[in-house]
Structure formats: structure tokens, C-alpha cells
Image (tube, rainbow, N blue to C red; front, side, top):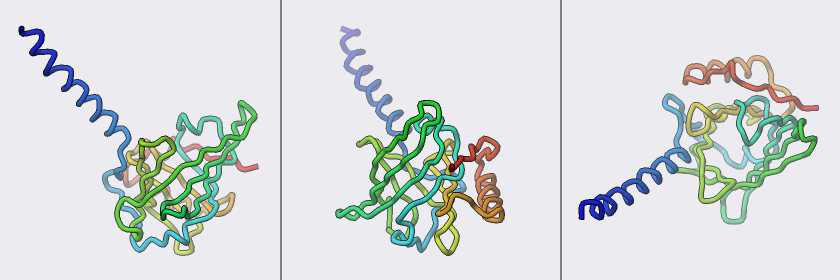
Length: 181
């Protein structure tokens, strides 16, 4: 009698907790202390970007020559086309995803998915006035990217982005500086 009652409560409760853990790990949030760019112009952001720096993520491990190309989908979402060269396996990899704005299109808070229904935060937290260099925060302090329209970034912009990231709590010593050759 007690065992059946326990199972009726424990199994749904366990599944609920597992579900919350999965949803929490696939958060579309923004790190505490970070703010998404306001008055964001999504059309100016579209196009090709070179990855200048990132943390060591499983899905980008051993990758150089990494680019992200953003284009408008007919439904208003953004197509995300990530490419990179795995220098260990000696092969190019490509991943196509979709990004959607979390709130208004003028706030640079997006959610991105490469494996639906799992979405992750993609937050432009700094960008220069000409949309040539961008600092991107993920949902947590585990994810950060520095992007550029060219294969290099001016030292002044690099220092600006590193200072901003440090203030938020990122350990910028762990950044991998991506080679483009």
C-alpha cells in the first residue's frame, strides 16, 4: 500500500525535477550583470562574422577558421550557418541553426537552436557603432564569443570587450584565440 503511494508521488516528482534540470541547462537567459544591446539593428548584424575568441566548447573543440553567417529566414527568424575546420580530424564542419528574438527586435537578446526543441541564449552585449565587432554572451558564464567582420580585431576593441567580460564575471584567461589561415 505505502509502496504504491510512494511510487505514485516519487516517479512524477522525479520526472518533474529531471525536466527542470534539462530546461535549466537549456536556458535562454543572460548572465547576471550583462545587458543586451538596446536599439539593436538586426539587418546590420546579418552577414558573415569571424570568430576571434571563445571558450573551449565540446561542439567547437579543435576548430579553427570558424565563421558564423546570419541571414533572414522567410518567417522572420534568423538562419545561423556556423562553419569551422577541425584541424585534428582534418575536415570542415557545418551546423545550421535558427535564432529568434526573446523580446523586441531592437533588443539584442536572442535564443538559438541547432537541435530543436533545445534553445540557448545568444546575447549581443557589446557592439561597435559600425557593426564590425561584437561581444556575445550565452545564457551563463560558460559561453562567450568575440566576433569580427574581418579576421582580426583592433587592440582597443579587444581590450574593451575583455574588460566588459571580466566585469560580468567571465574568466577571460580561458579564452581560445581562433586562428584564421
